[in-house]
Length: 93
Image (cartoon, rainbow, N blue to C red; front, side, top):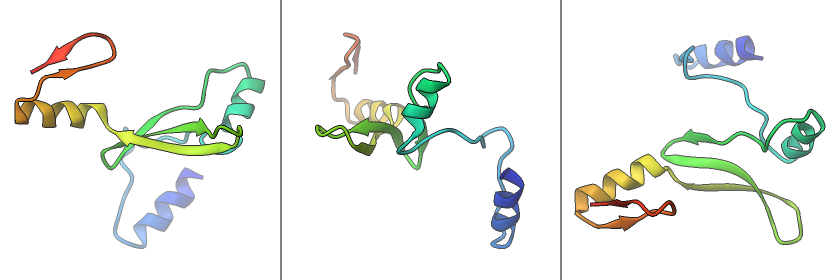
């Protein structure tokens, strides 16, 4: 799979960074597959400034969720001088 992806990207003059690229289980059936294998929830990944994760609607259907990357958000708040209270009780100024 990785070789096919690398070959396809090479057609456009792009390449994969070996240390940063990995295949993860993500999508509609990821949670069910991982539960069957005895693993934790589907993996979370950061891409283009957003954190992507699997969620569910109120009806229990799959939902692809994304939120602003925590690291990026804290940098913006620090730059603006805004005090931010995070869920663990820490404050950044």
